[in-house]
Image (tube, rainbow, N blue to C red; front, side, top):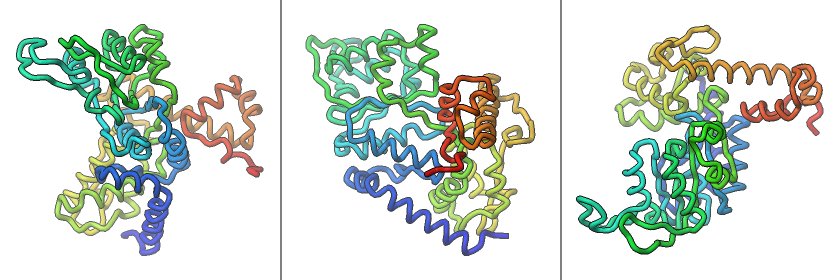
Length: 360
């Protein structure tokens, strides 16, 4: 059976409230004429907290370090910060550090002068110059070589750089936002990431939770992607049946939001009705919650991390519920330090206040 009129009315009421809640973001984005995808979708407590943090840090010049699994929307968050900043009318430049070799990445960042090397038949300003006055977003900064890390640190300290083959330095004025799916603290301890650079870029850490930690946002995101892609496939699809939404909400989505968008786009090709049904959703075996299935095609460490994350999140919720949000009592029962319990709750977007009987 298709979703009722009441459900759709509530859905569109929420979209209206989302627009109202994001007024500042929308106004800033209009001035920059951003891409249509520059919208953060969700209604979970974690999304509300994310909006609050973005509102707080965007007007400043502070360096932001976004962390999270692949597909969690790190670039989208970085663009939103830029759209709300005083640099909104200046360039937002994206560099994927994992997509280029060390030499190519250096040339991309710093540029070169004509004749600096073979085939250098013209000057190339580099992305530090392109981003001057705006924001430079270094995606997957953890993939950068140690040698290039040293050069990046110097640019951040001196606010100038030298193009390959140049005799003089070039001044630059950029706001830096970085992103990584690696644990940079672990990379520092293993000697793969410079500690001084880590503290320089990690002034304001902004961790993003995986989609499986906010399943309440899945129906809204799915509807968003349906509206985004239905014209491309020539289908006048209205929404999802309850069975389809239930199927989506039970899936782990290791590829996070990017994978959800892909699955919805795929379903739009297969659908034969005006509503997407459960059988229209092609989801890989071994990714459903609660069935104990294991997809051995995926890396062991990735699967293990998912299982540990899921256990920690569920354990923290049950523990806090049993003690009405009393962190000290919960930590004593768990045999762990209270600070560690606070940190674990924060890491998994568990709001301790939600478990306290007296919230006043």
